[in-house]
Image 1 (cartoon, rainbow, N blue to C red):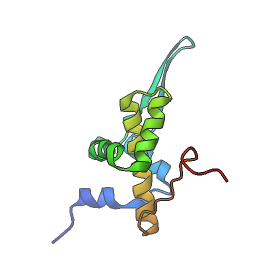
Image 2: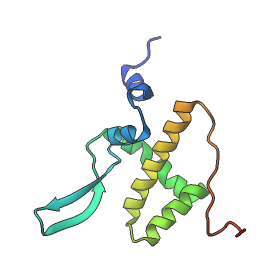
Image 3: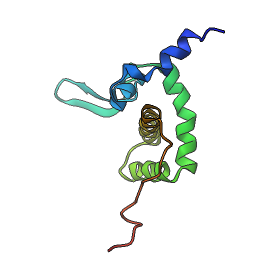
Length: 123
């Protein structure tokens, strides 16, 4: 049985030399909105890339903000800095994509190495 060409196109990570290129391909890079010198709006996702991959990453990112301790802390840190909830979810989507890229590229399981400096004992 032949593989679907669409699936092969998305599964081929050899096209990307780093996770930033994959994030740009998916349209998960921030883009500044500016008109002239006086009008500057808040940044948003570029949405130039693949809409299907962005759509596929949305629910896992929402679930990760609730159940993954590292990504939950990242999400809450962004909210404290004044980011909107959707901007924070977009950042979590990008972070998830970076994690997936690292796991697949290096063919090793995900290792939790996150340490929050506020929670770790001084010493």
